[in-house]
Picture 1 (cartoon, rainbow, N blue to C red):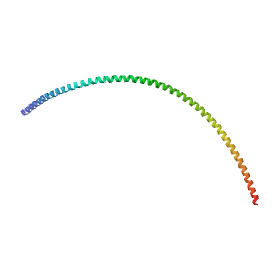
Picture 2 (cartoon, rainbow, N blue to C red; picture 1 turned 180 degrees about the vertical axis):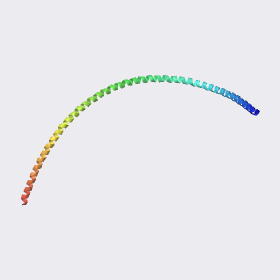
Picture 3 (cartoon, rainbow, N blue to C red; picture 1 turned 45 degrees about the horizontal axis):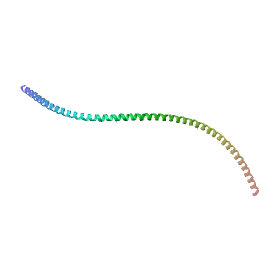
Picture 4 (cartoon, one colour; picture 1 turned 135 degrees about the vertical axis):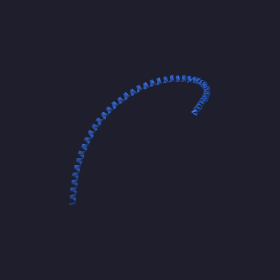
Length: 153
């Protein structure tokens, strides 16, 4: 049992010794890190201060450009409104032309119907004349045959 207590005591001493060594090592590393972080912080402060001036200058330029763009946008808005009025006017003119096209379409349809009637009438008259001519040709053909028979007999 004494050996176990002795081993336990040695382990405790080794543990406390390791912790003491690691603690001082961690404290040393922390001090070095603090020094490095302080150095970086100083350099970053210098850079940030330099950038603040540039950012303020860019902000002023952006505001000036924004003011110019606002004026241009307002001008374009007026022009767009004017074009909208012109487009509405053209829409009315197109509607008027549509009505005129409808009127012309009606007139063309009426004239087409009249021409269809005339063509049908002329077709009927032509058919009647062709039938009359056909009848006359049949009569002449009969006379020619009769005449030819008289010469051959």
